[in-house]
Image 1 (spheres, rainbow over the protein chains, first blue to last red):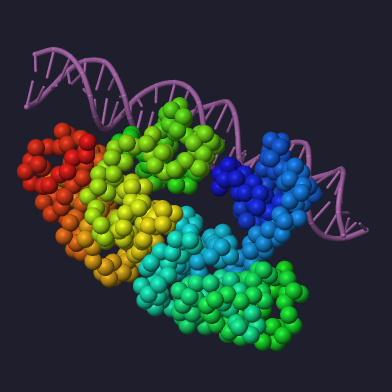
Image 2: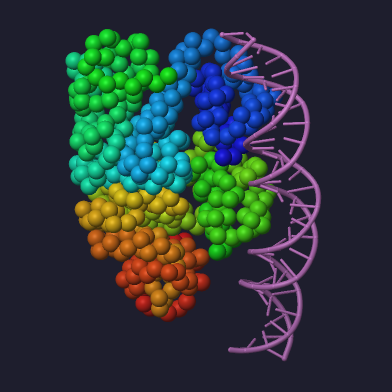
Length: 248
Length: 248
DNA sequence: GCTTTATTTTGAATGATTTTGGTTGTTTTT
DNA sequence: AAAAACAACCAAAATCATTCAAAATAAAGC
């Protein structure tokens, strides 16, 4: 990984979130503590960020927005944690399905050097997998512009050619009574089909997804396993009805 | 491989991803470290990129915001002309196949606002088509890392679901007696299959592709129509045996 | 046409420079 | 006081600029 790539990643991450931990950068970028420390020192000397104990934060000129940013930071760090945890569930020679979506995208940096095969319906996912030289198959079909995902009948037919050991899906909304839902019915169909093609189904969901309902139903909460954080926010009844893996 | 071909490839990769590693270029272009270094130095002196330790990045003045089209103007007038000409052949409601590869990529900027449907096996193509909100279908199958193209048996099966009005293909080498050839047999198979699925077949080829031979044969020169420039460089016998459209 | 002679391009070798990951011991936080 | 994070340093690795000879290409002459 190039120095400039790291710098850009750090700044991007910082801009969308406001704060970043060194340990997260070390793990996510896959380089040593020294390197990250040097990166942060260099960026600070250019006035692009302020170092704090344990990481760095945005230059204080944007002070007013900090509260909003602190929210988004959590989301993006959360997603990374969820991604890492999801990958830790994998075993040698697994064949997994990676649903299109930003949360599942966070799994890919952790997939390098594992002997697994990935099937996905996300263009961004495919591109990232190719760059990291991970064995991957892409589901064919109609390209959905807004999410760069493959959906529709041909995609579903294409998906039926495969059988998976584990399936990782993103989801928009989770509700105890209405189940898992998402705005686009065609995406919901794809997810349903994937669910039928493996026994281990994982939904990746940060805490913003809970207690909401969208248009199209995917499945009931009792059918799958959730990988999430902030289990404290989740209403008690969920815990009895579903399997929830908490990411620390 | 010609100097200009390398330069164009470097700039294209740069436009796609923003940064590029020297080692990647060495491996992909199959030439020595010195050559790549010289290339990068030359392109930097023209102000087309900025060298960084380990590779190069986009010139900040070009910025990420410049459209693909604008950047291409500086880089490769030739291929852009070929792309524009190819698009001028399209009619309302055409269903076309766009082969993966850098030359066919040049068609996409001109496709906006046409009511056509595109099928492709290139990840980069799909991404670009989605950004421009062009109706597109992606062929499923195995992802080839180096070219980000879909190849192999599942892709071929996937391709057989479609029928096209026009097919646009890239090609590595053209020779009057050996026909059209390309280094990877699997890519050759994909092209062959596409050829069978339409009556109007166009090969996009700048003048560096002529009078060369690669490993895997696609078809004879008499079977297809070529879109090219610099017709003066092309040996006379070609003109009798094939259809060649010259781009001005 | 063919051969010989410049010119350009390329790849390898050298040593200088930069980047990197680990180690040390110190400082900060809990 | 223990754990985590830190800065400073060092040696190994990667990348770099420079040089030079071989190879490929173009030009000139026959």
